Image 1: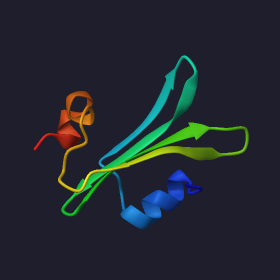
Image 2: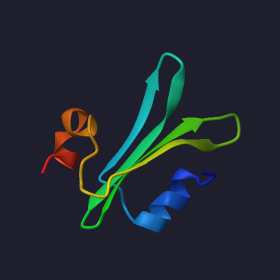
Image 3: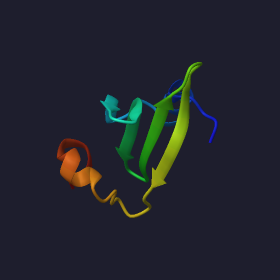
Image 4: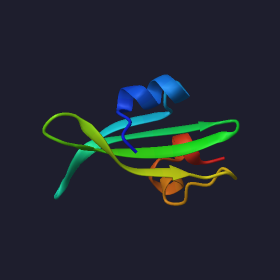
Length: 77
């Protein structure tokens, strides 16, 4: 839970989704991978020093729920 976005990219390769997000109460980056055998979405919140992992979602059967609606080019079958 202490990885940085760069460490995750190094571990999993180039993500299919890499977005900077800002909305009330949150500023950060979302990375997501959908490849054979890997379906991961990681949310990083900006801090004073660096980005810190806020959530890590893994789906073993290829479904990342709401992500399909928000980013069908990445997660729709």
